[in-house]
Every structure is written in structure tokens, then in C-alpha cells.
Length: 305
Image (tube, rainbow, N blue to C red):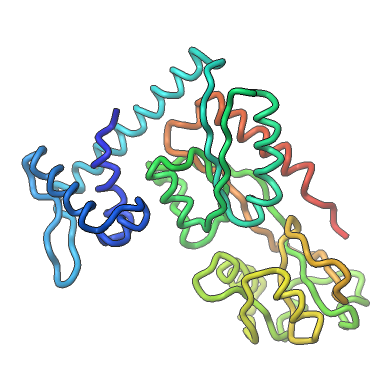
């Protein structure tokens, strides 16, 4: 077993504060500080020092973190081999993901896994991407479905194994009497002068829309903020602007809006990835989970309208 205090050190490094790590671990800040002190005493080096009102990791802490990543990878590989040696043993699998994944992809995939393995307990957690990474690091989740954004860890991050699952196209949603509904082909740039409805700053949806618009050569005029598809659709229906909606997302029925598939290069889409801790992906249940989710995604993604 890997010393759980190393996991605490990893999350302090990830968040930069004791409070952030405590929140991710569901600990109190004092409990995190205590574990850091105990770990430092056991290894015989100073791991954190005060810096203003915060803390700074020492060089010794960074050395320990590098070894911790290698230890955790080896531990995950060992667990995967043990699972391969005894694939019939009952187990537990926790899947987490953003809202669309948690509603459209994970439930049918989890149901398929339970039918294939009656002794398997499958748990689903809906969470934003940053929380999903915390769940993986704290070992509260085994597999996460995430949307790639500018804040996502790079593919070279040695803590995680990231596997591209699918590209989910982004559709433009406009009011039913909008002039763009009469065109045979619409590109994202055709909506450059429209008032835009986007998610609140800091959300994945906000980053996604801004990145798509910038890639199309314009900065959107943000008129309103809405994190829920129902709210955005209602604003569009009443003439307050336009929105981008992923193909997998369901919209409220009977709203006077039109969903327009976008053409052009590059056609906007969000990249969905399946993420595990490094070394864990070889476990039979995780391999099967990724394959099952991929099958569900292929069957669920609607064709262009």
C-alpha cells in the first residue's frame, strides 16, 4: 500500500494551499497540516515552509513527489495485474464525469457493466473537470470523463493516463425566425456579430465557447451568462442571442429555436477524454469500462440535423 500521506502531499502540490487540499480530501485544514508534519518527521526532511500567508513546497518535497508518482504508477500496475489474475472477483468501480457525460454516457455504460458482472458495484459521480481530477488523485474515482480545455493537464502529465474518447460537435442554436435558419450552410464565423450567451467565467462551457469563437477568427460579444442548457435555450427563444450546444446535450422540447449543425474548417467540437490514474488503465474492468462507454457514445451521438 502507498502511504496515504503521500496522496495528501500530492493534493497540496496540486492546489497550492492546505485549504484546497483539505477541500478535495474532505479533511479539515488542521488534519492536512498534521499529516504533512507527520510525513516530514518520518522522512526526516522539511516539506513545506511558510511564504507570506501561504506555503511553499521545499526542494525535498518536489523530490518526494517525483518518487511518489513512480510509486503510484507501479502500485496501479500491480493492482491491474492482480485483477487480471482473478477477473471473477467482485469489485467496485467509481465513474465520474461532467453533466452531459453523467447523464447520457455513464448510466447506460454502468448498466451494461453491471449486467456483465453481477458482483460489480458501480458508482457514478457528477462533477466538474477540476473536481474529477481531485477524485482520481484522492482515489475516490477510478475513471473520469472530461472535456479538454486550456486548463486540462497536458498529455505528458505523469499522474494520469488520458485516452481520447470522441469529438462531440457543437451546434449553433438560434431563434426559429433567425435569418441563419434559411441558409443551406452555416459556419461559426457567420454568427460573429451576434450577441452571445455563454457560461459563467471559469466554467468549462465558457472556455469551450471562447476557444471555438477565437478559432473561427472572432471574439464573441457576450450578452448573457447561463450555465444550464434550458436557461440558454429560453434566452435564445426570446431573442436575446445565440448559443453553442454540444450534439450530446438535450434541449427542452417545444422551444421556438432551431439547432444548426455548423460547417467549415475547423468545425467546432469538444474533445471528450477518458482519464485514469497512470498505470490503472490496464485493469480489466477499466479497459472494459472504456470500451463500453465508447460503444455507448457511438450509439448516443445524434446524426446532424
